[in-house]
Structures are given as C-alpha cells and as structure tokens.
Image 1 (spheres, helix red, strand yellow):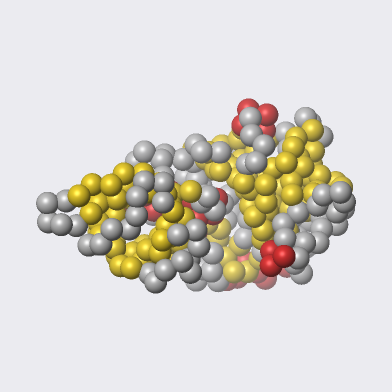
Image 2 (cartoon, helix red, strand yellow):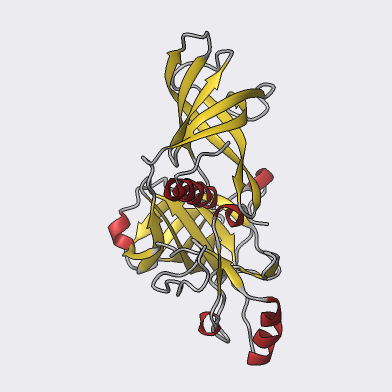
Length: 302
C-alpha cells in the first residue's frame, strides 16, 4: 500500500470524478484502502464503473486533480490544497531530480531521473534511468506520470514519450506540459515529537550498523536528533528511518539527510540538526501531510 495513504485522509469519489474512456490520474481504492485501479487505467463502460463502485471508490487526499475540492461530506476529510501553475513559472534548473512512473497496466515501473534540458513548449529531455546497471525501456507514445520537488513546491503532471534515444547518450523527449498540478511545501513548520529512529552514517545504508536515536522535533525540511554517541560533523551524510502513527495505521519513512548543526548537551548527549536531501516527492507529500495534520490538531507524536 502506498506510503502516502497512512498520512493523508481518503476522499470519497463522486460519480463524475471518474470519466468513462479517460485514463485515471490517480489510483483508486475501496473503503478498506485496497487498491482497485492503478493510475492510467481506463474504465470503459458505465457497467464496469457501477460494478467497481459497489466496494466504494476513494482516492488519497494530495493525489487528486486541482480545482475539485471535496464537498466535505465526511468530517475528517480536508481539501487537497493543490493548485495549478504554468510550467514555465517553475523555472526548473538543469539537473532537477524527478520521479518518473509508467502509466501502463502491465508495466507501472517507477524510476528516478534527471532533467537534462527543455525545448520551450516542445519537450523535456530527461535521462533514461538504469536501475541495476540496465537501461529502462521506453516506447514512443508511452504515457508517464512525472513528479518533482523544486524546494518550495511539489508538483506532478502526465505526458507522453515523444522520442527515445540510446546514442550517443540515453535520454528521452517527453511532452512539455503547459501547466502542472502541485502544492506549496511549508518547510518551516516544526512539530514537537518523541520518535525513536534508526540512523546509519555514510553515503549508503550499509556504511555502518544502525544506531538508535531520538527525534525531538520534525519538519518537512529536517529534524532534530538527540543521541548518546556522536554521529559525525557538519556536512556528513546519514540515513534516517522512523515510523509515524496515523489514524489508519503506521508508515515507515526512510530519508537521506545532511548534518547542519551540532550542540553538546549538559547531560553528555549530542543534539544534531539535520536537513533532508533528495527526498522522493511521494515521501515528501506524506511527510507534509503528517506535519500539517499534527499542526492543525495541536497534538504531539508520542
């Protein structure tokens, strides 16, 4: 089950939210949060929709299209807070990291890629991912879902592959969107928490044996860690994993971080201020959803 479901409420879909003959822009779940339809799936007839709808149709808040606020029938559901921007207003720099997912019922592979170039109003040029050292395969006309984080905004859009090239470099041209859907990230909002986390230091998770630490406060952009033994110095990298409680269950977040500040405490322990880096957009949305929910409720994670 996607991580985001644990940190965002579920929104009941209305009859006109699913358009017959049009690919779904988000996954659809039943009332028990079981996946019914993947993004890109096409419901072909009213009869199919009626049959599927017997189990209840829902999507996760934060994964829906803009301009369709929920009518508030369920008291625990909130508006998505997503909006639409002109793509050119994002001013994406070369090297922007993006999450790319195939919208294919038989192949929904998800990859990390990098923006290599932009042909204004024509195409985006992104590198072809090579997980495990083997280049992923794409075809002309293939529909994709792309997500990215600009530092203040998380956004997503769907587009088709225009051109695939494997020489002299491996890259693809993707349709350049006129608009994208996204949300502002409130990175400065911090919440008090008492979480137990496992930390590993170094450039990868296998660099050392995980050590237990306490997360004292948390934001979308970083956290404050309290440890008995030193973790490193400023600019050192580490990996952080911890579980978040939610009404619907628990979710484990795994993030990369960089040490920014170090404070020696009176009791001999050390406090580290860390900044999250290279955060997957989906995890970022889940984290923001959790921080927003705790902020609104005035609660504290224990």
